Structures are given as C-alpha cells and as structure tokens.
Image (cartoon, rainbow, N blue to C red):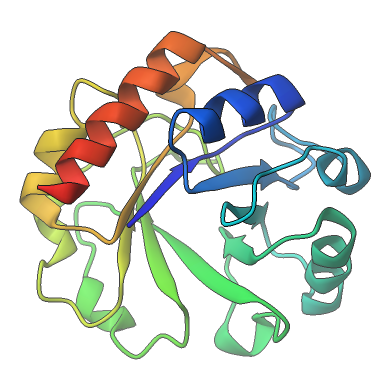
Length: 201
C-alpha cells in the first residue's frame, strides 16, 4: 500500500504528512513547476525510516536524475516526460507517469520495465499537480503492473477511486493545498485517513 503526498517544499508539510500516515512524499525537480524544490533543499527535509522519497522529473537525462537522487536521498524517480525505457535511471526504482486521456490504452504499457505506473488526469501543458480526475475504470483492475492513482484526489473521492480501480497506491497534491507548494494540513490529514481506510478495505 502506497499513499503519497506530492509537491512537498518544506519540513512542516513533510512532518505533517508522515505523521498522518503518508508512506511516500514527493519532491518536484521540474524547474517550471510552482512546486519546484532545489535538490539540496529537499535533502534537508527529514523523513522517518520506511517513508519513500520520490523525485518528480520531466525529460531529465538519466545521469542527472541519478545525481539529484544522490543529493536528495531519493528512493524512486517518478518520470513525467517523454522518457523511453533506455532513459530510465538504473540506480533507483522508477514510476512512469501517464496522462489518461479519452483514447488512453493501458495495455500498451503492460511490458513497461518499471516498479509502477502512475496514472494522472489530463492537464495540457502541465507536469504534475493539475488537479484533474479521470475515468478510473480505465485503470484495469487485473493489470500486470502496480498502478498508482493521481489527479484530482482528495478525501471526498479517494474511496470511490480505490473501489473502482483497485490500485496499489494513491497520490495527492493540488487538491490538498492552501497554495501551490503549501499543504492544507486539515485537507491532507483527511485525505490520508480516507485513503488508508479505502486501501485496507
């Protein structure tokens, strides 16, 4: 079970997320994102043992991903660009992010050499944190790879999303924020509680 809070930019939000039950936190290293954080700053944000540190990247060369991973002490690279399998970093786990649009075909990715696929809502021109949900029935409950649901999730809809898609994990960002890069701790805690209950059901 993976419950990830993405777009972490400060220690207070990281502490509140993990204290409320997040099993992973995400740092966005895409420079054009409003949630961008410098690798050294991410390294200074402490996380408890067992909480996975995930880095969000967009079309970065594998060597640069691995360099940032060393600096920021990452466990996972979450790739949101047009990366091909040969572009995946070898030194850490990979979650490949995919936008679920009207003609999305999950079966195309059945042989993808990754730990998990992260399915996100449509957000033209944006990478991460678009806050738009998608048709969760497109996930395919019997798919061979672990699926993480993202895009427009909060406490009000995560249980329904999990019931429809039966994912390995869920990921929230923009719908639990007070402002880009700053979490609303009440919304975040409510989401984490609802997600944990849904994934355990």
